[in-house]
Every structure is written in C-alpha cells, then in structure tokens.
Image 1 (cartoon, rainbow, N blue to C red):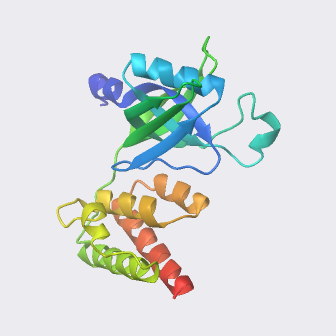
Image 2 (cartoon, helix red, strand yellow; image 1 turned 90 degrees about the vertical axis):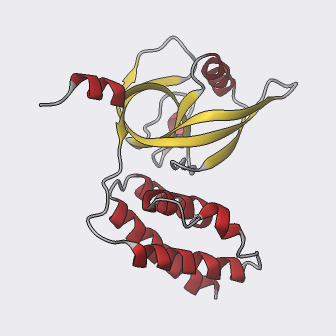
Image 3 (cartoon, helix red, strand yellow; image 1 turned 90 degrees about the horizontal axis):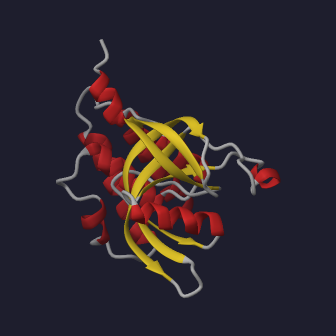
Length: 212
C-alpha cells in the first residue's frame, strides 16, 4: 500500500521556466538571465516563498504559441535559487542549484503571468551491480576532452570527485561536457543510474572521437 505521507512529500507545486534548449540536472548549478516580465514576476514570487522553481524543456514548434502555454516535456529539473542579482532594469541574474528530477502531472490554474504545475519527484533507481568501470570510462573521456580543449585536468576534481555517488557523477558529467540538448533531456528522463552512466560514457567517448 502507498504511504499517503510519502506521496504527499513527493508531490510539489512549482512555477516552471520553459526554455528551448536548457537542462537543469540535480547536483549542478545553472546561471540564467531573466528578462521577460512574466519570468521576472516568477523570480520575485519564488524569492518571497521557498526560492524553488522548475526548468522545463519546450517541445519543438513552441515558437507559434510562445506567448501562451506551449507544450513542455513531462520531465523537468527542479531547483532552488541560491544566488540572485536584480538589475536596475528589473531583470535578474540568478543561479539555480539542481535539486531533483520531477515529472509534471498537471498544469494548475493560476492568476499569475507565469505557469504553475503539480509535479512528482522522480528518484533515482540504483544500479543493480558494480559501476566502477563505467565511472572510469566517464572520468577518462572527460580528461581527454579537457586535453583536447587545452584545459587543466584539475577541473575534474570538483566536477567528478572520487567521493561522489554514481548518480551525481552521471549528472555532473552530462551538464559539464555534453552540449546536445536532446541528449541532455534524454538523460534527465533516465532514472536508472546504470543506464544513465552507460549512456553518458558512450556519448562522451563519441564526443572525444569527434574532437580528436
């Protein structure tokens, strides 16, 4: 039987920031410049409440209805505003810290300029066996990418530290090194940790081959 208290704790009501090619992964930071009036209002309201919002990827073809409520992908990244700078123009520079994956269950009626949804937290499905080899492949590919970009390998220490759990390594590697927006969304939707590590390692190795 489902625990009602656990279900309630996993259910969130969040404003959403729909963007075309941006992904907010857990365990990562995302800087955003907020200039539209409706999203400036969203940031102001979030700061006055719990500082939380979700970044949702717009579906292709959103341009026709962008000023309204164009469709977004069901899985989004929920985050917390951990730093905020309000400019004299009323615009904001914010820094989001990714907290968790969520699946959007319902868009709620709202008297705000921005959109509000009811969402369910998506927890990781742990790997069924050892994943050290996959993590090793990810670290090796990231190191080779840094070499190709003439960046110091010491940058890996903060992004992919040896004390980090596998799920965090997969998300941070994807956020830092994989530019393809469709792939990033696919990885956001992949809750199985082993599958996510495998997909990230393969994509990183393919990217290394392209660059070298």
